[in-house]
Length: 312
Image: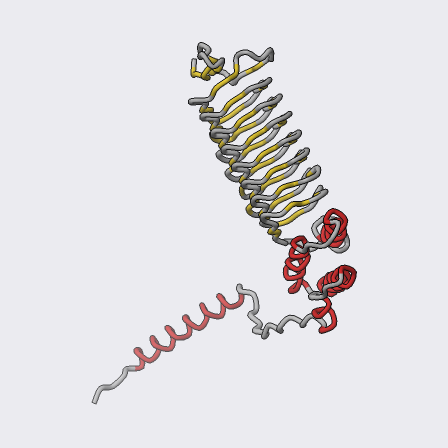
């Protein structure tokens, strides 16, 4: 039968005591863990839920307003409420501009910081719609999708902040598009977008990758003093009017491969991690002034009155 010596007992006690002391010290430095069961969100009142399906224009709008007021006090229902309001843009009511104006009046105050009803972290999804009189100036949203949208009137996004991913892929701005001072914190996608009127991106900040591949700019295009913190691509983009990039900063590469410039182009004082104009073309029969980044200049005109930009 084995025996345990007093010395072994003391050593065991010391080891256990040291382990307990270390555990207590670790627990002391950690915040208290309180396990509280999460309460389910309050259900939408039945009368509000019923009116959300009403066939009457006024009843549906009143239900949305009631739901928004309900969500003001219950953050767990806010994104659901935003989804209901956005679904309203798909209703085929008479006079779509007037109906959409009512929806924007409900939604915009909840997207604008500084408003007493501001809801942070909301996502927007408005794909394949015709939108009238969009005015999201100064608003803040997380992810935003405007795929294949036709903006029938002026579209205002000046000073807006997008904290997540934003996409206008395949959208058409039938009038003017104002993004001056907007901030894209994650990434922005304008691939295959069409800008019929002025495209104002002066002073925008894009922290993530940004794409304008195959976009069409038909009138004045202004990226003056824009700041791009990651890769930017204008591959196969068409610039038909006055194009301004003066004072812009590209922290990484600026890709303009196979782009076309028909009018005035100003790249004065532009800085970039690198430019690539490989295959880009410039119309040579237009009486305009152009300033290219250092190291790039048009070559000899081709028979079609286009000259390729080449590295000097």
